[in-house]
Image 1 (cartoon, helix red, strand yellow):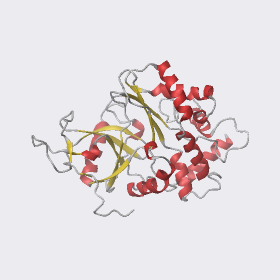
Image 2 (cartoon, helix red, strand yellow; image 1 turned 60 degrees about the vertical axis):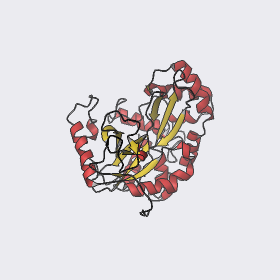
Image 3 (cartoon, rainbow, N blue to C red; image 1 turned 180 degrees about the horizontal axis):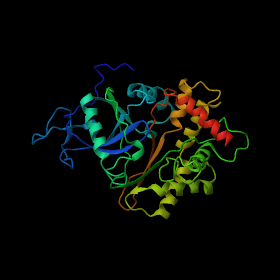
Image 4 (tube, helix red, strand yellow; image 1 turned 30 degrees about the vertical axis):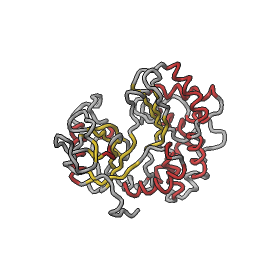
Amino acid sequence: MVITRSQSMPILDADTPIFLTYFAEGAANVVFKIGSKRGIPRYDDYGEQGTTTEDGVPRIDVRLKGKLLRLRKDLASVAPVLESHQHFEDHIQPLFPADALVEQLLCKISPAFVAKCNGLLRQDENFGEDDILGRPMKRRGVYLAEDEPYATLVTDMRYDKQHASTEFKPKWLLQSPSAPAGSKRCRTCALRAMRYAKGIETPSTSSLAYDFCPLTLVSDDRSVLSTSIAGTLQRVRGAPLDIPDLESQLLPYFHRLPLLRTLRDHQAKKDPKGIFEADPSSPDFMTAMTIRDCTFFLKIPNRKDGGDARIEARLGDLDLKTSDGNKAEYWRETEEQLINE
């Protein structure tokens, strides 16, 4: 991707007038909430970058409104942001409707800004893991790449006054092409069982901790589909909701929602042969691995207070999964373990 001067983007430096709060992180990125230094933003706190409010306070670039900031970790296995964003535009966006994806907007960042964010991460490591401000223990000691000149702004899919929210990783929505005939478990369920048996993960630490098979998400049988819907509601956050009523809302919604079936179909098309026969460096295989590790975000209106608000579903966390950093070997070894155990 060639960035020209005509392609204006937000610029974040150490003195940019925003207040950042640690929100979450995965293996590749850390996500921060963006707020006003006032605490609660006023109506005129957002505007054109470089302008000030009536009382002289520097405005927050309006393009940051309703967004979260995602920054890349300093790991050899994580692709540079520009490369990942190019892959997103070229290989992911064409697969799905625009309103089915979490929006990604590039922004420029300075080394001083990244250093400031790393300072926040180190500060959060002073708190216990169970503290609301504490950084998860397994993520500590790894920080952001201070030589990375770009970050991404992503749609904020958190709950608000009108919505509750939930999220989960659908993972592999069909059996692995490498699985032996007659396998009793799907690839995701087999991996979850293996990790639990070996003590690598527990239900409280695993991204696969939901208690339903992901294949049920794309079932045409409503009774099967209802088990996965009940599982997604275990992690609902936000406004109190009438759960029985919510289940009755979500069942027909999921039954007619094409998004997860589309995701399944692209997983099948992009990797029809499996890791033992595929070229791990091919764009199609990297796309397959990317969409096997995305997150499904769901915002659910509170019917009592939400007015005309609608259920909103989007796919996010679509960072490029490359075979760099011995990832291809890891994928093969994992597949071999699942087959042999």
